[in-house]
Amino acid sequence: MFDCGKIAIIGGGSWATAIAKIVVGRTHHIGWYMRRDDRIEDFRRLGHNPAYLVSVRFNMDEIDFSSDINKIVDNYDTLVFVTPSPYLKNHLKKLKTRIKDKFVITAIKGIVPDENLVCSEYFHQVYDVPYENLACIGGPSHAEEVALERLSYLTIGCVNTEKAKAFADLIASDYIKTKTSTDVVGIEYSSVLKNVYAIAAGICSGLKYGDNFQSVLMSNAVQEMNRFMNVVHPIERAIIDSVYMGDLLVTGYSNFSRNRTFGTMIGKGYSVKSAQIEMEMIAEGYFGTKCMKEINRHMHVNMPILDAVYNILYERISPQIEIKLLTDSFR
Image (cartoon, rainbow, N blue to C red):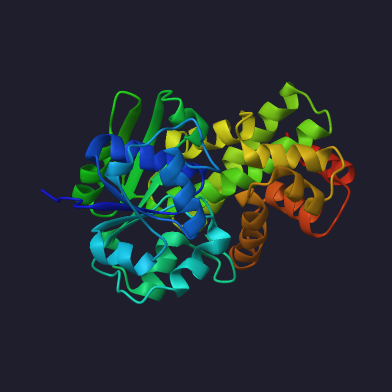
């Protein structure tokens, strides 16, 4: 039976904090890499993350903090990466320690910019991590609800089913239900696309489209996601599973969704820059939209919702005009 060994969290945001809460609640020890020493000092002093999910209290005796990513990688067996995708490369540039023999889990719901690779492919191609040592965490899981211990369902993806089950069993609890999948690439792409579609849902909300249309938008988004995934990674999958459609629905509808919030601001007339400044949090879908548009230039999948969001965010086409064109394409 595979043993996950000592587990470390890489990243300091809300989802990283939520995953740290899940893991340390079961193991009573984690390593935790955070970039900023001042943030670590505040965390130790306050007993909680000073910037995210401040209601979640931690026992400082159970956490080995470090701003040195090499120290954490050296000392831990399983590395859970939870940094925003645009910053992943900058964190990894500091890495001098090989990670190919580590169990690398990505909880990053985004694409590595410039490379246009989902994170597992990036770790495999750039850092030679074999696919059997690569896993992902997917499913409908707002960090805020995990912090409140509201029932959530997570899927652990890994081509090595024994390793997927080991980590799934490790993090399961009264409020975290888990299952496994071998569809790592599909889970990662769906995690990116659902953010794009949540921005679309937000834009339509900002434009005062009602619930009737939102349901049609989500229905078309599921079909669009399925079309793309059947081209990029054609395996047998049920798109209605919670790790795909469930994650799409919660991101498209929930008030906790920063991508929907970002889209709503765009629909109300904010510029991209002003919306980003006011949110003070990263909407992964903004970066994911550009990456997915570039990837689809080679795939040639019919993706009208992706195209519409890209045109609004990057070509500065009026949301009113672009969404009206999109509504005319739906049936």
